[in-house]
Amino acid sequence: MLRQRCQARGNQAQRAATALAIALTTVWLAAPCAWAALGQSVESVAEDQRQMRGTLRSSQGQGFQMQEIASEDGNTVRQYVSPAGTVFGVSWTGPTVPDLALLLGPYFDEFRAAAYSPVRRHHPVTLRTEHLVIQTGGHVRALRGRVYLPSLVPASVAAGIIQ
Image (tube, rainbow, N blue to C red; front, top):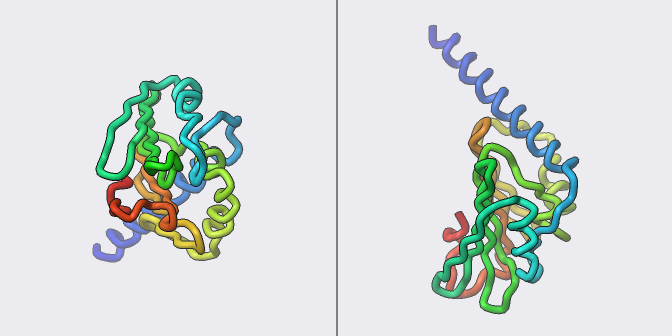
């Protein structure tokens, strides 16, 4: 009985990992659109809103600004901007993963190199590279993640606000 339960959990975790891998692959092959890329200026947020056909909401935090785009398909992308106007963090929630190549901009290749590790993961993934901290997780139709550049997070802001 215990063996069957463990085997069922393993199968369930394998299906979730496979679904996440398929979602990430789909995202990498998706058609391009403009994003306020990580480490770059926030000026393209209006274009992001148009591409996502979403609603833009801005809020001010202590030492940062958050630009949130909620799309009709249920995805939400949040871009965290320093007082200097630089995107230092990006997070997402929703049924699909957004186009990470566009969200991560020049850091996408570093993310991709770290993500193609031979280690099988059956739980939320946390990757740390020389420049990035990446956390992804969730399950089919309820995916989430966040990516930030520790070197660009304002001194008065805790990385935990990137949600």
